[in-house]
Amino acid sequence: MAILRAFADKQTIAFPLLSDEGSHVIRRLGLLNERVQQDHAAYGIKPDPRHTNLPYPGVFVLDEAGVIVAKRFHESYRERDTGAALLAQTLRVLEPRPPRAADFPGPSIAVGAWLDSPTYSFFQRMHLNLELRVAPGFRIGAPVTSHGIAPLTVQVAETPGVVAGAAEWPDAAENQRVGQDGAALMHGGTIRGLVPLTFAAAPGAGNLVVTARLNYQLRDDAGRLLPPSSVEVRVGVSEQAMVDRTLPVREDI
Amino acid sequence: MALPPRDFSTIGPREGTLFPEVVLPDQHGVTVDLHAARGGRRGLVVFYRSADW
Picture (cartoon, chains in turn orange, red):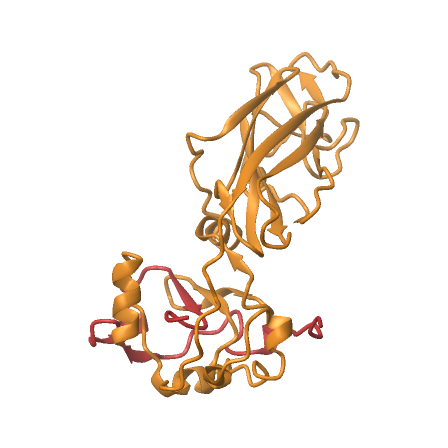
């Protein structure tokens, strides 16, 4: 408990940090990882006699009734979601656009782009956030396959040390509109996209730039299709030094 | 070096089930009933390896 209190004070944590001394709850819930000692190298942590009572690292997301609506567990003790990424992915709570976001103009649209965090650490997981604002009088082809209009797609440029997942469009469904022909799915106004990224570059990789290209097609309100187009966005991210893990092994726990 | 993939959906409480009752002391020594502390709000329950090292 003293350890938790010191940690909470240092990190200015206001929420409860629960102390499962002896890991009884961890065992009861079936979350005890019994192979940490043997597999420490694969977990990216040093061998340590304190590793006998560790849970798998992860998060349960509970709804108002206490029912588990999502589980996010990581194989490695190094991988972390940012809080923003976790909320966006599990609860569909989108963070507001931060002041550091940059805008990239394209024909009849503007694309705001930012990362969940301006910094990354080893095995950080976060998102490239995209905010598409379509000019009045135009609709953009939806991310799903459309009829007669090119779908909205995102390609993240190959960047050493960055692994990109498939783009998600959490608020796309509510903004979805059927085109005048009754077939093509299109959006007007503003839609948000999220591209999951894992920063797996070795520590010391330094500052990185994530480059992505949005491919899209617009149609005006008179029903005329514009030629397919694209916008490139570039977002810089700086490396945050890792906490020094070369601590002496303690035998008193 | 890489570990075999693990199916975390079957490890620990499952999605769609009520999270088990948990009553533990917090960092101030106050006993916390997890579900009571939520007070009908949504919650994140995080398991992590240590606050010390």
